[in-house]
Image (cartoon, rainbow, N blue to C red; front, side, top):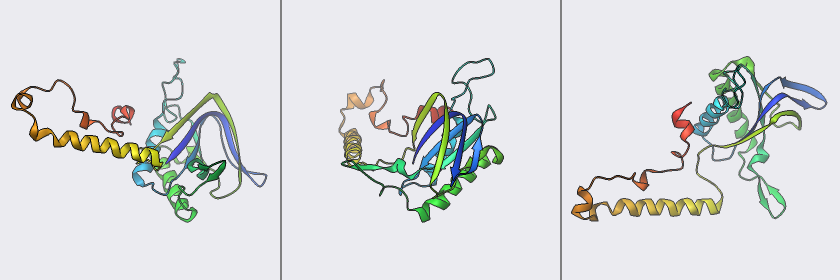
Length: 207
């Protein structure tokens, strides 16, 4: 799952010339759901969006407060084009979740966000409609989020497979270590203990 999170002074969604939703200061979130996304991806994205420290505190110190801590609004817009893969110059969207599955999945994300925050502070556009999204970016501040699921890009998949193979080789060498190596205290962290998910330090230290 991918999301483009923008800090805004105001944002709104118009469909057919009629405004369907709007917010004042807060976040506008463009959300792209992939065909491989699960509830775990949704939970990660909800947690990150609501806890990103993109706002100043009461004394003006930057990057100190989240949208929830400042009691600001969130406008979510379903954006399947974030799952675009270019074939030459032509966009291809086969990685995006089909609309009939994406709509209830997107709805569940909104409900989770409302449950975690305040229902009246979470607004959204109109799923599947041709929308005009009006964003007044504040800063500008824009953050690109990707849930920590396995990559679908072939090059990234190949890289991940090679990393996994190296980890397995490292583990398999354990029994063949010399007695001196086995008995010596390990001063360095085992390389096999590192993973992409653990690289997200912020998710371990804070919500």
